[in-house]
Image 1 (tube, one colour):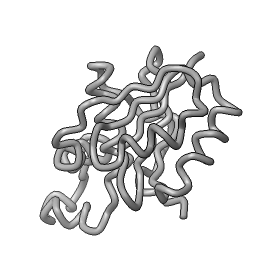
Image 2 (cartoon, rainbow, N blue to C red):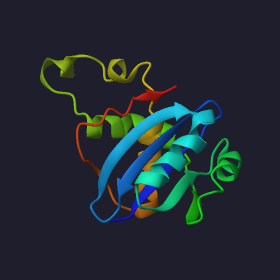
Image 3 (tube, rainbow, N blue to C red):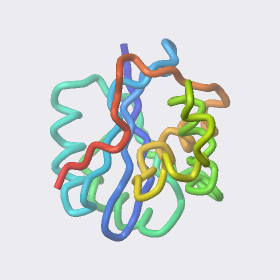
Length: 145
């Protein structure tokens, strides 16, 4: 089955999601330094059947597109307006608060968390007009440095 990559580009770091559209499942969600993105996508492309890459049209989308020009299939630049803001709400949809934690302000749970991978997920969901489920217990805060 063909998979897609969604990227939330940034100057110093990028969020990346690997998902299967027909299954509506996320298989991988990471945050990595922007300088590592090209090699990471190249490696993923070697092992996965990637049909397209969707890149948010924000901060460094042009530079990212040039870095991954080796990818000879479809590269789509897509609107990413407010994805960083919306990532906070989506975080709690993916990881609901339970038990006595309801008594603690929600902002405490996302304080100092990097939500770039969730922003990449939102870009993908907006593009596909569907919500995705997590394939397994994915940690959206994983950093590759």
